[in-house]
Length: 90
Image (cartoon, rainbow, N blue to C red; front, side):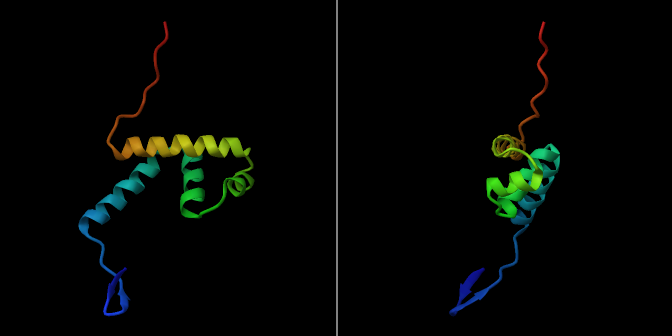
C-alpha cells in the first residue's frame, strides 16, 4: 500500500512483481511435499515450530531440518541452479 494524502491506496502489482510471484509458486511446487508443507505452515501461516510439529505429527527437530532444507532448496530453485543429483559411488 502506498500513502497518498493521509490515506493508504493499494498499488497494482507490476509485471515484474507478478512474474516473481509466479516463479516463487512454481519453485514451491517443485519442493518435496514435506518441505513445502513445513515452509508454508511456518512462513505463510505463521505457526511456531512446536505448532507445526503438532500439526504434522513429527518431532520439532524434523520440522527444523525440513524447514532448513526447504529454504535452501527454494533459494537454489529461485537462483536457477540445477537440482542436486545422486552421486555415484564406486
